[in-house]
Length: 239
Image (cartoon, rainbow, N blue to C red; front, side, top):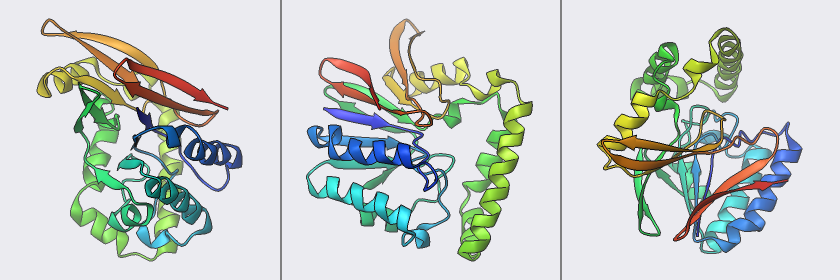
């Protein structure tokens, strides 16, 4: 059995959700062979030199316990925590995976994405995403002090929230043509992603092939994961 989560947005100011996450790692995850975290595990990540922060350390320690118990943990970057690095991965016994990532889940070819690359109608966001994912931008940003980085991140988050209020909600969802192209490019697999905070199961017919798409839930109101095995996939809510 393989479990998928996304958009947990963990931070010290949300103790209830943090408690649900730690219980999830102690409970359902221990019955699985693998856990995939498809982006935005944290509300933000300023760099691996913030691993000593008490809250960050508690999350890393809990993930490391699962890893030592034999659960394979894979982490994909999200739009909030794309600065997660190899030091983080080593500390929690996880592996960082690319976006997109093609995997086999109980014999079913499955394409994994965070999901933001499918939101192609949000041109401003895609332009910003391309800029901050370059090596030069990341090197310049990480050369700042940790305090300076956190200050800039706070400003970027404030701007992002302001932008969301003025944008039509439709452009922050996936573009159907982008979804179809992703399915076509990867051989018509099952698709699992997060980012949009619109959990659902969708069916797409692409070039005569029927494809399943699962959108993972965010963890702002409660926890949720997708459970997949040889019988298929099913969402499970956590409270």
